[in-house]
Length: 130
Image (tube, rainbow, N blue to C red; front, side, top):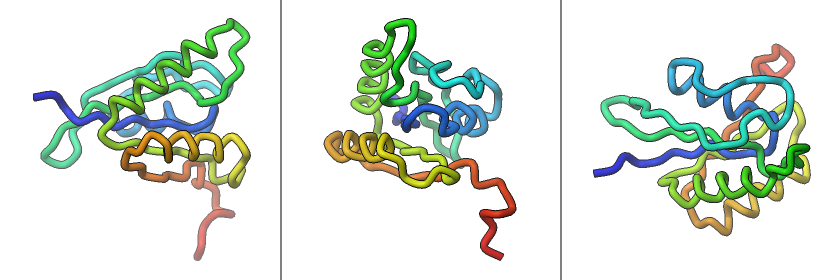
């Protein structure tokens, strides 16, 4: 029996790899402020309570790669979404909703998969609600 797949998707630089590493409990994906560092799918088996799943990190949707790998990155994202039992749609709370977030949301609507919406980078005191 295969493990359920949880794919983390979003536009570039919202913290997908950081979230992936945190959930995996170790540094597996490269984390860098430069957009486009993650180009392939990166996976790890993680335990959630008494269950296990395959967690998948993806490159940023809509990235324009200077090495002409944009189509390859998009193909890997498509495969991750198609394989997923559930998708985590990650956004950067500091930026609010930007047009590329709307593009990602539309792709996920068409994918017809359960989606968990998550806002990242809220660890700034100005985001506290008191």
